Every structure is written in structure tokens, then in C-alpha cells.
Image (cartoon, rainbow, N blue to C red):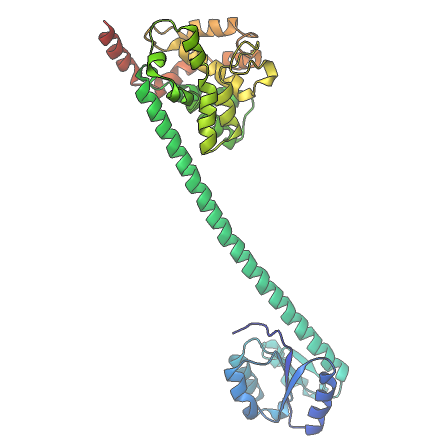
Length: 368
């Protein structure tokens, strides 16, 4: 059933033929479609089968038997029909309970055309408000449904992205077992430094984590003969190694590019003094997250085992980092690093690479 009829249809239910004619004449001039009836029994089938009326002007004399029960039966047939009872002032004792129970919407004197007009206008205005409210509610529900679809799609895409990230990390670890756990450790270091330096947005911090995990993804495209070479690299080989930030950036860009992720992948080998690569950026021209990562990367590199050298202590790493403040590293990032005691940095490394000491012994055994 349509809650609001687009056509304004009014039923006049009154035994007084002269009054029905008068009301019909008046309402016809207001662009209202009308139907007249002498009694409820004449119109009951239309009310039950078509719900065709928006409003009914009803005189109590046209109702058979109990007025309340008769009006309630009309409302039960069409709950959305408005009832304007045509009652004289002397009948207020009967009418007030009907208004109180919600059976009657308006009361107007049958002899006061202005009162009748006001009641009709008020009810049609109410119907229009209900129609607009229903329309807005439907639009709201539709928007909510669409929002839920977009949210699910976004969550699915995020899951795919995270899965791709994990697969890429696994691929890198399988290619270069000597640096197992490096990305996870550096990601923890970088997030801590970023937080110390004022990063508070959870999304940005998570993007920094992802960028840190994927910083060396471009090395997938570097041949093993270069990537795993123990001897010093030739100039030509070194130039190929220096391509990995741009290669990694291009790879991730095809999947999903977030600013912080891209900045770390592309600029993690830039130096504060401008002597880095691939673009030779200097100082503040290097994105903040890339400057933070550069220090975290160096910290892990210094304190980790490599085939060509043994790991060094965190105390040694701290001195080397502080000695390179202002040239390789941003002094503000160095200060942030120095504000954390060395035990905390060591704890992070231990928590993320618990298997590494055993792997280092395995590597050393096979090298001898």
C-alpha cells in the first residue's frame, strides 16, 4: 500500500445532501477529487479494497451505531487515512475522547467552511511531510547499504593489499636468508622513531610500517649474482643495485600507492647531505618518514650479522649514528634515537628476530 496518495482524494460521508453538495462545490475549486456517500456501508468496499482516500470528512450522523467503533473500523481498513469529524460545538463531550485516542485527526464545525478548509490543509501538509520523511528514509537506507558495500570492498582491498605485502616479504626473505627478519625489525624501529617525532595518526603509522616492510622490494628484480655477491661490487653492478628503490616504487604503485609507503620505498637511500640516491635529495626535501627510516635501517644494518662481517654492538651503532648526524642522518632523527636507551632498541631487535642467532650460527658453520 502506498502510504501517501499523490492524488488528493477526499471522501464526504454525510446524510445531509444539501451539506454534501455545498462541500463538494467548495472542494472542487481546490483541485481535490471527491466522492460522496450517505453512510459508511456505501463506501466500505472501496475502503477495504483500494485505500483510495487521503482524507474523509465525516458527519457522526452518517455512522451506523457506535461512532467510535465505526471510526476505528475505517482506520483499520486504511491506517493512513485522515479523519476530519464534522461536529458542532455542543458535541465536544463525545468528540474529545476520539481525539485523545487518535481515532479522529481534526474536528471542524460543519457550518464553518474556514475551519474545514484549515483542517484539510493541515492534514494534506502532514501527508506531504510524511511522504518526504519516507522518501528521505529510503534514501538514507540506500546510502547506508551503499556505504556498507563500499566499506566491505575497501576491507577486501585492504586484505588483498596486506596479503600481497606478506607474500612480497616472504619472497624477499627466501631470496636473502642472511637478512632474515631485517624488514620487521626496521619497521619496529621506524614506528618508534616516528612516534617520538610526533606522528600520532594510526593510519600514518601503519603506512610507515608497511613502507618499512617493503623498502627493499625492488631487490626482487636484482639478479642473485649481484644481490648475493660477497666480493666488492663493480661500478656497473653497483649502478644496478641503486635501481632497486625506483623498481620497488614502480612495483608497489601498480598494487596500491599510499604516500608514506611510496616515500620510504623510493627515498630510503637518500642522505641528509644530498649524497644519496636515486635523486640526491637534501635535508627537508627528503620526506620525513624516509629520513626516519634511513636511521632505523642503518641501526639494524650495523647490529646485524652479514656474510662479509660480524654484527657490532648497539653502543658502536649509536656512536656511528651520532658521528654522522648532519651528513648521513637528520640531526632531529638522531636526537630522537638518542633519547631512547640502548636496551630498548636491543629488546625490539630480539623480539622480532628470535630465530636470527641460530640462523647466524648455521650460516657461519656453512661458510667454514
